Image (cartoon, rainbow, N blue to C red; front, side, top):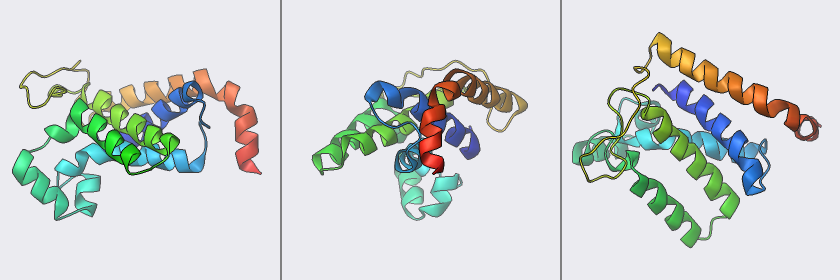
Amino acid sequence: MMARSHVIIGLGAWVATAPGLHMPSLGPAYLALAVAGSLLPDIDHPKSWVGRRTRPVSTAIASALGHRGITHSAIAVIALAALLLHAGYRRGGVAALAIGYLSHLAADMLTPRGLRLAWPLRRTWGLPLCRADSAMEAVVVTAVAGGMAWWLLPSHFSELAVWSR
């Protein structure tokens, strides 16, 4: 999927899961971390939005491991969260980053290539609904965004009022 789709799905995933974690869904820092997490797995692709901004790191990762390798696996999410928690980062911030990261993986599983979630094992998982930058990707993202808005926004009006002050 494209960066804009990952951002929308990452935001939706955070807004949906934050209440269950007793975190503010619409807190600007948490939203920013969810967006960062939703883009981070593509650091292994030098032509991606995040890859272009992190060269030569993205080029080195792509050369050594390829695209949709370890950065697109469950191991990466677990290792990143454990490392950040061990380094003393706050649970809420790590949760927002991890939720965004997981949303990226879930979105990429909707493409024909799927993901190697149990990297380094070769097995891929996916539900091929759309190709990157296709009309169907736009339909999937619009459906996710619309569903999240329909389901969540009425319960967040009081939270929205707090952030608009």
